[in-house]
Length: 122
Image (tube, rainbow, N blue to C red; front, side):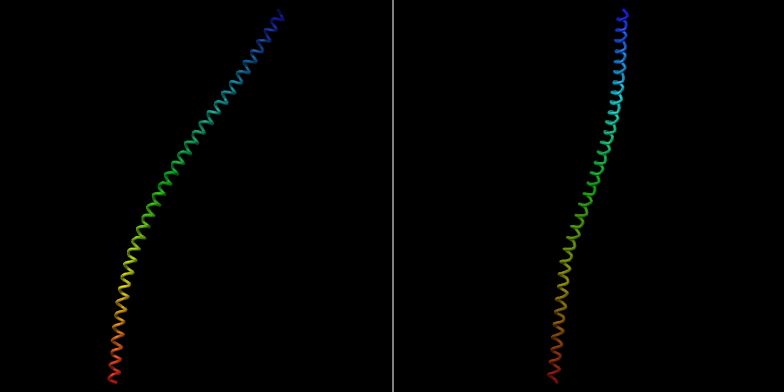
């Protein structure tokens, strides 16, 4: 019976050791699970922050694109206006130039006629 009791005690001790080992393993697993949950939550927060930053950057880029299009349109309008007014300014300048050339020709002719008249009287 002593042998039986000692065998029984060995079994009880082994069961207690198994329970203790199982409890330690369960605690480690629980700690590991909690750590994984914390890391997953932190990762979710980081993903949300990155998504917000991407959305903000996309909005900024869209705003810049719209502003760029507006500037391009304004530049085109200004170029068109300059072309239109430059061509009319060129036409106006040519008209003035012709007027001056005609005036100079008339003055030249008048001076030549006056010289001829003076020489003829001379």
